[in-house]
Length: 111
Length: 119
Image (tube, rainbow over all chains, first blue to last red; front, side):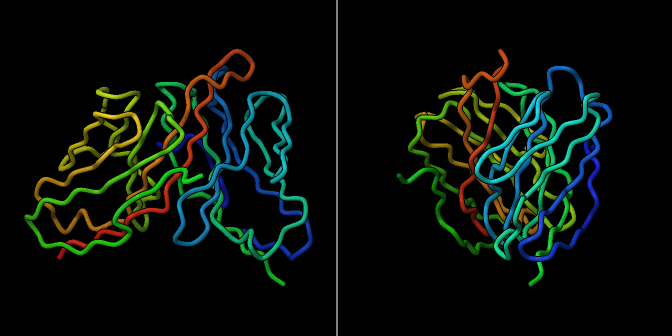
């Protein structure tokens, strides 16, 4: 069973921020929240991950609620190249940390 | 900076044939993974390996065999291909030992995929 819930699709205007939500109400204390994306026909690409605190890198920001039951991936200035399927995954890491990909959110960035 | 590569990128074979998909990574990552991706199923883990000579089953291992004699290579073999194994196959690798907050993380880096068609 998927451990995360994401909307199947979202649209975003080019240049605007894209906010992708994810629910993970059964997350346990030692599980991370990971975000990957898959652009058509390519291998999945790592974006960002976090445990408790909000995280930011050159690609995106990750906002995790205080109770850790949900999170939001923010692409601050979406471009057409950000059109992809975005996967939110919870994982313990290490040898038990096999990533379980759900169906993700299909983000369409429109001009 | 080759990273992780897969070969062949495209393969057409017939039912009953043996097929081997290759995966090679240049990072010396300890962990390697094989996934398949089908419409309506997302990515599903077939096998993974924690180190050379250590492999374990994932969610859908039936009909597949793996080996890992060297850290950098992780071939996937379909011993007798079936039509249901028509899919896109992705290899991935990760490095254990990148602690964040005292817990090891497992960011995975994926290859470009192999599109396999079994006729």
